[in-house]
Image 1 (spheres, rainbow, N blue to C red):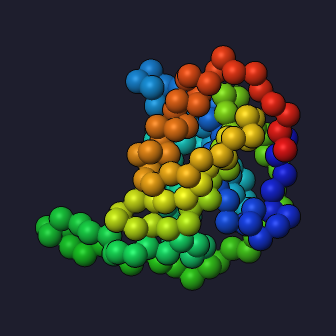
Image 2 (cartoon, one colour):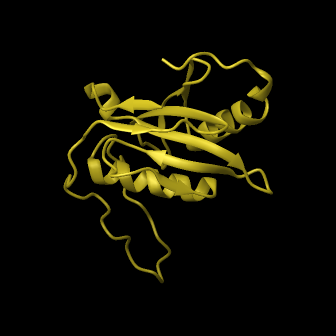
Length: 154
C-alpha cells in the first residue's frame, strides 16, 4: 500500500502502477495522483500518456511550452489548459503487480516530457528526456528487472 499527498513534492507526482504486459508488449495498469478521486486504468502506453498529459494540463504543473497542433482539416486544437478544479488530497493505493513508478514531470518541451522517474520497489531513480525514454525505462524494468529482488517500499 502506498500513501501519497503528504508533501508538496508528492502533490506533483504521477504514480504509474504496472499490473501486466499485453500481448504485444503493451504496459497495462493504473495511474494514480492526489488530484484523481481514484486510480484510472490504462491498457496501452498511448492511453496512459493521454490520461497523464490531460491531468498535467488540468492541474497546471509542467505547463506546455508549445501549443498542440492538429491537421488543418480538423481545425485548431481546443485549448487544453484548464483552471485547476481539483485540490490535492492524501491517497492510498495498491502497488502495481509488476512495478510501481513515481513520475515527476518537470518540463513539457518539444512536444514531450522531461523529468524524473523513481522505481519504488527497487528504490532507484533516473532522469528521462522524453516520453519514449520513460516508456522504455518502465518496460525494461518490468521485463528485464523481474529477476531482481524487490526492496521494501519507502
